[in-house]
Length: 291
Image (cartoon, rainbow, N blue to C red; front, top):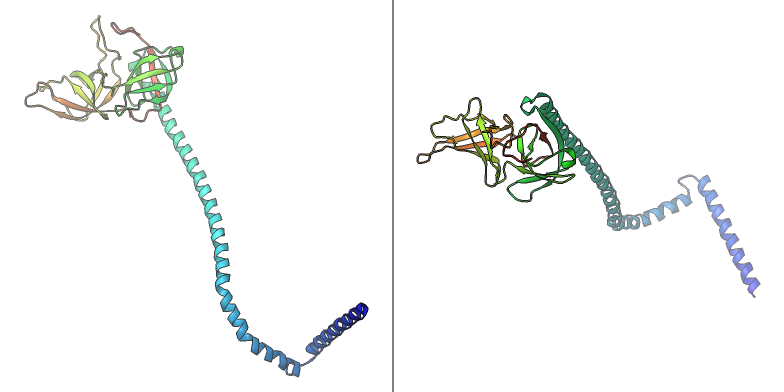
């Protein structure tokens, strides 16, 4: 029984294969106007609307698949572009930082070579590693200290001008009190021939200093340059040598009921953005100034 079923199935399979071969042969040999071609065209005509309808029905699905493919491709491209932008931004920042440091070093070298007012001092370059967190911008910490010969009250400058003085040292660091600190006072002269006064900070504004004790009788021109006075009477003296540039007069106001003018000075050094400074150590002794 089982063997008869197997033989029957094999016979049917062979008959179907033979029929397929015959139909293929007839299809290739027959002209396009033959009966078989007519049957094919009829079947195509009947199924064409069904095929078109299926194509329209499946179009949203195909579009959805294509949208996902395009979205994932675009997202991948965006990630690559974002990474490239971040890399370029880092390279630009690094280049700009190098340019800024080179400019500061150039100014310090110019100070070494050209500023005769600090003759007799040894210059020690330090980098700012800490800043006061207050709005006064009153102190910074630098990465050189007593092991480099730095002492309390040594003047501190940049290539632009006076910054402040050393007020505390360790073996490898120093604390610099800036001229904008509320405890700071710098004796100063207006070039070319005075008068002399005392530079003090304007509270909360590191871009504005006040020159006090300038009589109302003195004519102060806007744009006049201030330098350290460097005075000494043999018993006490200024902590700074003569001639260190401080800033430029921006405004001078004569008070009607005041004895002294109110003179505003913009410092040459950018005290909010210090990176490198020079400490002027050694030098001649200053009476009354420990160091």
